Length: 363
Length: 130
Image: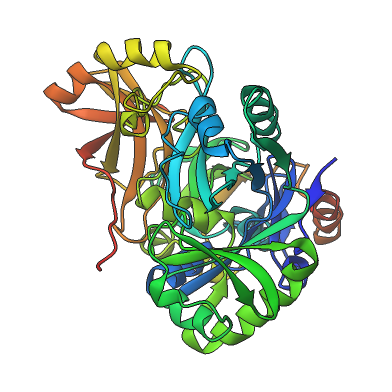
């Protein structure tokens, strides 16, 4: 049985193509996904991300409890700031990638992927036992609306009492947006400046409508999951289920920097990750740009002289580069030798290896 | 609702065929329904060359969109006499004008399968899928 966000009606009235994503009926696109992608790069896009999970961790030892439960050092995070981190299992495999916001001294909000938040909430509840910290999964109460793109700050500023000029990247503040209480975070998954607005479900529809109206002249358009995927791919951001999984450690994914061995005490997965940090990973996550027009896609083999040397995790035509792009895990040896191709339905299509991200916004 | 012109024939693989009643040469494209399902088309390839002989059901090309790739199957058998250069250069024609400028190729018909659908039959097929 598929679930709906509080904004499903507005998506349908806009003529969106809906798709099932992690058990949710979500807008894939409203019209042309390329136009939505370009609007976010040049003006702004409006996203319904209410399928994401919001898990609150509250108590005098909430920070220490999260230090024990996650790979990051959350107890030293300043109130009002956010951090990208991960939750791993005992063998170091990634259970989810997360953004953790410290709302105040003894209150954190953990934002998890739709496909994983129930598991994350259960794991957190289990792992914080013995600390003064309570875990509450409030995903069913909260909607999430994102405004992303270079004009998002000027659009949002007209609707809120919060001083957005003071709100840094990866920071969060409580404020009133369009008349409703909101948590306003300067975070996103598009490679652009932008905001994520957490509001109670009952406020989602008026918030969406007010934002859509206020942003129209600035070029704000509703944008679906298809544009979100190509935007995050260009920005080199991993997607759980594609680049990340329980079979992969943060070090395998080239994200070992999120693992903070320097924090005090033990954490779940620490000993396994210490070993993972020591041995050289056989494969590396890289960016690929196709020379031709056919698109390398999730699950396709990366080849060299006919032998399989890796696998594509995500791929799409890139609006910003004008050519197909992909992320892939590729054997180190093959990367050194070069001459890589992707097996696109039986034909070896040449690709070039590039540094991630594919796209970086101009400041 | 996507349009389904009355004067065309259709396949279960969401292609349209124009000009069957005239006899020799037909034009083939993909339907507005298929174009909507695909989203923005970014790449069109017809593997077979002009002059090649194809049989009904052969995979003769592919249509690639942001999210997916689909084979193009030959709706009829015969000789490919023309491939639309405009759609190869500008694949978005499949989205903007699927029954017009977004046509894919033309075939001199030698074999016409008996399972082509009328507009009404195709409408029934797609109303069940959408």
